[in-house]
Image (tube, rainbow, N blue to C red; front, side, top):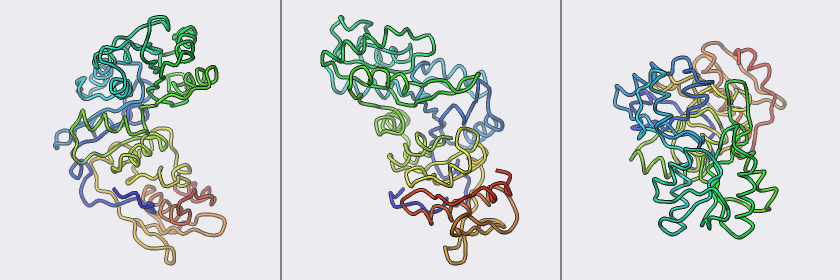
Length: 343
């Protein structure tokens, strides 16, 4: 995929599971939500796999081990083995292993997923700044992570020990709502030390490199629900992406997306892996057409005429909004048009 400014979602005459060899799937908001499978996810993934597409599950959550994630997916009806799961803990462990001596001690501020990933790279997890660590590794540790773990990190960093973070997502979804994520915990250490960590997780290159190394994907498709991690990560890795609208991103946010947050394809849910993608045609002068809809950018708001599938209308609106915005964000009011589409 070129880094030129994307001005419209792409069409595809083939199902995406035929056009790409590997789907790099985010989990929360894409495959499941609150512990339950998202509607259409189980059957769509089974069909894609049966057609020859490899499925890899890529998560910024460093708490759970690949074995635990695979077991959860299998319980949901999505047969998965640990090798199908790539975590930010694995990405940060590789990053650390490339910069410290073999067998070095690493002070862990996080959970079991991070410890397992470090051991996989031949590193020794330790608990105290007094254990002579060669690095500090911080990953999401769950709501029970003791406050004292942050103090240990600060003591080590103040002594000059390099600091690494699995990811900096400020929030994480839970069954009860939105909770503080690893990014919020990183901010605690940043405030106390004034230091900055090296970060491995989405949307940064170490995470993309980890997924490609582990899957061997030759034509990967990133599938996600977040513009600032999944879609930006695909942009940074120069690969194509599919945004599904089952998670945190809504239609208004999509229309306002800057270039690095504009997906290649847009669909309602994981059924988008199986179907062809409707093509957007037209230009600024005559309007952008998709299905039965025509979208244009007015002086103050986005306009939409016609009828048909709501997603086709959204794709046409993306073309109008992104073209008008160029390398920035579209600030035109989409409210009436999205209400008409039921979005």
